[in-house]
Length: 280
Picture 1 (cartoon, rainbow, N blue to C red):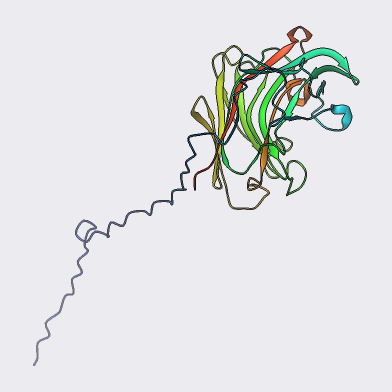
Picture 2 (cartoon, rainbow, N blue to C red; picture 1 turned 120 degrees about the vertical axis):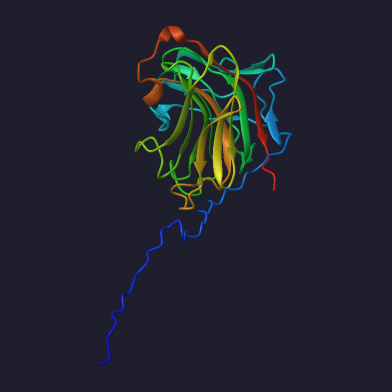
């Protein structure tokens, strides 16, 4: 008779410590290219002359809300009028004056470099002092030269500096596109409260590249917009743009808290405007 001997099967569990999983690091995201810029401006106005702004570099947008454009502002923009735009002692001064003209209550100036300074990518820098006073709306900004993607906001807008007098010393850098704009409340904006924006000069700039736009106040980065690669609706910034310098009165934004007539004449002062080319 054969005696059966029971066979007992034992199972052994290994702890994670005894048989650890391989340590595979998480992949690092691809870092976007960092661009650099030339050290010497390729286009600039240092305002080291006297009289009207240099006609080789600046033209004027002339007219008012009555001409079908603007943001319900109260000024009439004049052309080549020393009372509204003049250069002396190394400074461009744009002055908004309380006076009636062409059905409007104020005059001012809006300088444009279109056809005389048009740019695709680069570093754009302006050193300026903005005016105080409720109802003032000072800006240094850029618009598309060719409007390749259609009317505003489809072809884009680059705001390097905006300041409204009722929000003293708060400066704004903004970008507007079909998908991101203030009309639908999606604009890409950064703000910063700085000391003495209306009594001292400060430097405002954007670095515009194929991959991103960065915005700076006194060399401190406050704004970053990345090219999402989703077409012109979010990134129309692959076409030429030009400068605009202006001082508006009232309007949808500047006039939100009314207009103080005692604040005029009001002056926006510009020490220089410079453009540095993007390096290859």
